[in-house]
Image (cartoon, rainbow, N blue to C red; front, side, top):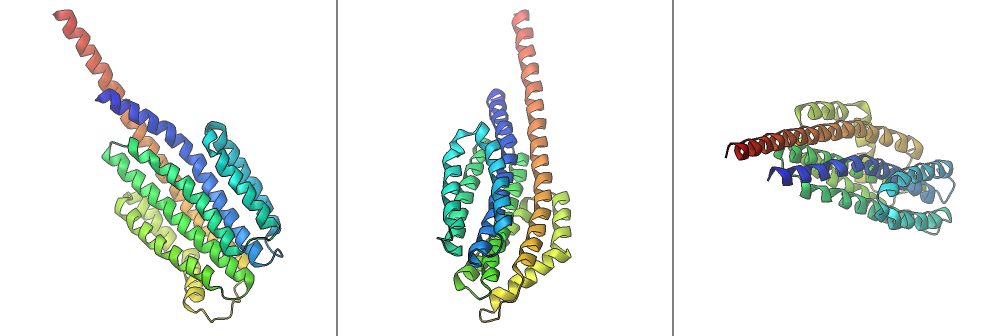
Length: 275
């Protein structure tokens, strides 16, 4: 039983080392999705240079992921096809947004397969907190991208507003789950973010343009995108803390199981020698 647990932990450790690169890739795709929304919403007059720069950033993260996991190559090809349509402005903001979201969801689903290797309650709690933190970031990313498309159009768009409202609901659910599993230190950092000026500013702009469908759209899209990105980056820092805790618990359990195996093996040899 100890040997099987050690095998599961070793596999989990290997997958955990891959998670950081996947997380960076997801964050980059979320940002690319947001810039694409603004670019298409403005009919190609805004966010062009930012979008190209972000695409290069995404490609650098894909290179790291694909190097060790060839199964992500089809995912990368889907992104390449999507980019061509975006740069030619042959997609609407909402359609491009949906396609990026499908790609991101696929990456998140692959990450969740790690759960089957977790057999320790403490590790499971940290994993659940980390997972819901990822979902919180994805929800804020959806709000950032959908409203960026709306602000770039400079007029209300019911589809984009609906996506933002749905994302807010997803955020609330993920936040509740995060709070249920997060450690005291993680909660302390979360409260710092939630009580900060940037969080409150983003929340205020969100409420203004999702509750008042007939309001004149005057919000500067770049200001919105930059402030929403700062909020996501604050959660990124918390995410790295949670991932570090996750890895520490795995290493601690691996060490303990190895010690137990050595002790059991030594006892077996001792008993055999006596008999």
